[in-house]
Amino acid sequence: MPRLVLVATPIGNLEDITLRALRVLKEADLIVAEDTRHASKLLQHYGISKPLLSLHQHNEHWRVPQLIKRIISEDLLVAAVSDAGTPGIADPGFLLVRTAVSQHLTVEVLPGPCAFLPALVGSGLPCERFVFEGFLPPKKGRVVRLQALSNETRTFVLYEAPHRLIQTLSQLIDYLGGERAAVVARELTKIHESFTRGTLAEIKSYFESHPPKGECVIVVAGKS
Image 1 (cartoon, rainbow, N blue to C red):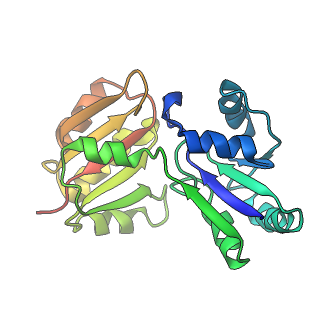
Image 2 (cartoon, one colour):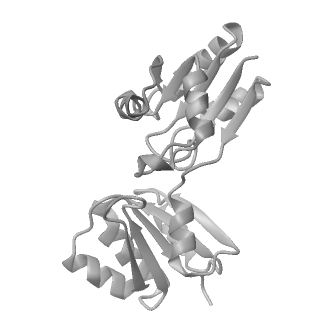
């Protein structure tokens, strides 16, 4: 039976892949990857050799329809992976799933690694209700999003690249105030994993003297 399976892959520590994920990758007729070079390293680590096809934000609009037709016509089991974590969460995958669903193709999603969950749970901030914002818009719409977050009463989570962290913390201070409690989690599951806790002002001051490396997750307490 033709089907599409979204496979969550490690965000750092290669031991975090599930047994089910490894089985699906071994059984797949084709593996669709955000970056085939990155995926090749993971597959080689586990001794898996499968055909790879790139699918990313620059080609997905024309490649997805072709891929869905191929899955159905050739009766394929296709596994989709992103560079790290769960496909579709701040990574390519949404368009692929939406198109597959519209064509009544069986879609399975394997649970597994996702950066915002360990950051949120390990933050010490309330997490029974939360908002995942992903990456803020780089330009257009950024101010509108920040204004909305200034009134958000639930804990919210952002992704940010290290070279933009200070800028984002500065803007959060401008719109939320420097005394808002927050946490920046870096290099999750890796050797240099760290959680920097405090107010937004304190965290910004820390990273101004300790330039961050590695992808960052920002967790911010909601408005009281």
